[in-house]
Image 1 (cartoon, helix red, strand yellow):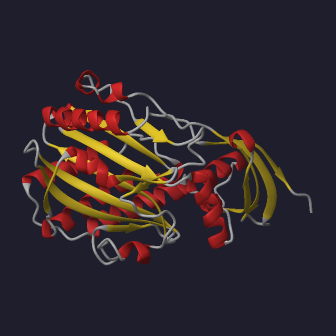
Image 2 (spheres, rainbow, N blue to C red):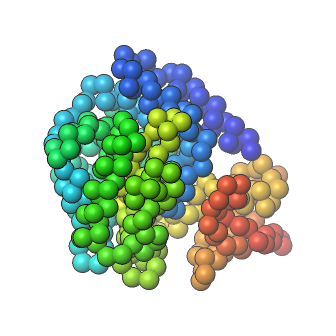
Image 3 (spheres, rainbow, N blue to C red):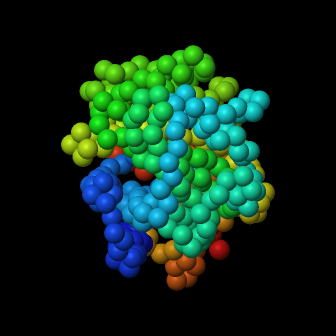
Length: 339
C-alpha cells in the first residue's frame, strides 16, 4: 500500500542520513547479516512487534552506539537467567522490574540511553519506544565470548517487556550455552507451557529445528506475564543467537493502557488499520474510534474513513495466528452507518 512505500522511503532516507562510524570487521558482518534477514517474517507477541525493515536500522544504531560503549562482564549461564527472569507472586518479570511503571521509574535503577543517543528507537507518534544497551560478555564458566543486546520496551511510556539477545561466534558455542540454559530451566522452572525443552537439545539446534519454548502461570498467557526462549542457528549467514524475552500480561496491558490514554491501545495498531483499509478497499486514511475485544479472539469496533465525503461504520472480525502471507487481523464484516 502507498503508506507502506512511504514508510520504506523514510527508513531508506534515515539509513542514508545516519553518520558513518568506524566499524570493526565483526560489526560490518553483523550489519550485513541483519540486512540479509530483514525480510524474514518473525512471530512476535502482540505488543512486541517490530517491522523487519526497521530491524536493520536498529542494529545499525546498536553498532554505532557499541563503538563507544563496550561493556565487559563475567557471567555464568545460570546467572544470566537468574538476573533476567525473576518472579513476583504468579507473574514473571524482566530483571525484577515491575510491569507498567514509567521510563523515569525504570531509569532510577537502570542507566537507560537517552533519546539523543543511538541506542533508542521510537515510532513517529512516540507511543512505542525501545531502549537498547549493547554489551560484550565473557562467560566465566566456559570462557565463551558473546555480544549481547538488552532491550527495554515501552508503550505510552509504560514498561511492557524486555529482551536479552546473545550473539555467539560458532554453532558449538551456541550449543554449549543453550544446553547450560536448558539444564538450569529443567531444574528451576516447571514444564514449558508451549513446546518442550527438547527444542533446546543439541540435536534440534544442530539441525536448525529449534522452535520457541514459552512459560506462563495459569491457563492462558493473555492474563499472565510470560517468558520465551528462542535459539537461532543460521549457518548460511553465520548467525548463532539466543533470545530470552519476558512480556507483561496482555490483558492487563490493554486495561492499563486504555485507562491511561483514554482509548484501547489497538485503536492505533498499524496492522489492524491496514487490514481494515484492505477490507474497505480504500487508500484513504482510516481511524478506529472504538475497539472492543470479545470472546474467542473476536473483536468489534467503530471506524471513520476520511474520504470525500467522510464515512463512518462498524467492523467485526477475529484475530488469527500469524503465518507467512496471512494478516493477524481477519476483518469478516464491514458496514457503513446510514446518515
